[in-house]
Picture 1 (tube, rainbow, N blue to C red):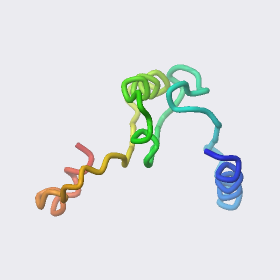
Picture 2: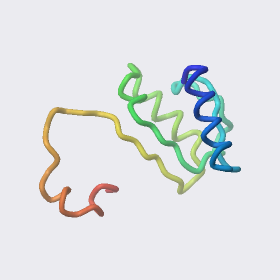
Picture 3: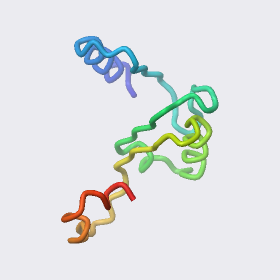
Length: 94
């Protein structure tokens, strides 16, 4: 995240009066976060930009608490969404 992105994100958190959101600047291959201290990792395009995806996922696994979740929207392969997935939202989280 750039400084401007952090500034805007922090302003949004303040405006919404959220108390459990935190932003830290770093690189995803070496997260500035303690082991097993995160409930959710959300990524929208960052993983796709990284050359060492194994390291990225190793870091995510390192920081997530046991049983927590990763939510990401990353890789576009140019193919359409299967019709079954469009009709069944439950399949989106498999």
